[in-house]
Image (cartoon, rainbow, N blue to C red):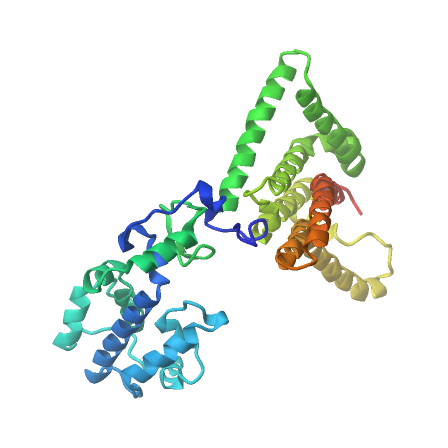
Length: 432
């Protein structure tokens, strides 16, 4: 079964039907490192290590103002806390730093009463633990060093018994259908969150695919036009029609015939890229990158940067910001009060309208997928009941009709985003 959030939430894997991609890992070391870190056995082992490190630190006299609770009581409280929905699979250090009832740890840490750096005269027991753990930066604070040294999957694998066959089978079943994306530049916390570094997500790859297809298609089209060859075949005529429509019906009316052609390549790129990302959401097991706020906000950021740069190039940096306030011919006594207020309102509006540009695209793409999810969920909820013969056809027909609507919305929202971008650019390069 596919993930319910497949088309809505970015992830670090692609999802296929389970029978097409079976996970056949045979041992603990075959699983991704972050998967091991999410395991209850590992988290209990890590919690025990952190507790022992902390106890050694307190016993050595280098930490003051702290009374360590009994180990079993504290670990039991942690196990209960991490199984709450909002705290699911959080490590022991997050429990100490965030959980209610752990003021014995949190207050001294917040007040700065804990020692911030290890010195050269620590106890032999602690040094032995440090040497047995991974290497660390000597400038880290002591609590950061404890967390770093306790988080050691390789040592966990050496010191603890292997996972049972039943656990490996259940984890393989959970990973069936999930094509994990290699992460050479970063580490993951789970399938949806990164831990550190630069993590490559599904939407990043899909965006690169869209960009590569656009480069290939329009390089070929430009080559035909450049050498005067007629543009034949339906697909090439369709792309040419898109470009002419955007130039003649969007860019030139919104920006003006004199300035529009300079911005037409950018508007072409925006339209085709947004359209390509939208259409990916119609392909099973893909997902629409424009269903992620990071993507739509970045696209709105491109428009905003173009507005500022183009306006500053036309009127100068100060002239661009001065141009935000329309000329009203007010008497000086009124202008002193009204112009600054208008300037603040217009500048705030400049930022807001570009943010809304990204939010509008996101909302329209996500809303359609949520409606489809709700309709298909009707059939799942009715499975095995007497209403299923009635609900199933309604769900199928409704999903088909909404999919057609989603196809229309994919084109419409690409057009709206491009049209509004053209309007914003046009207002930036002309006097109000």
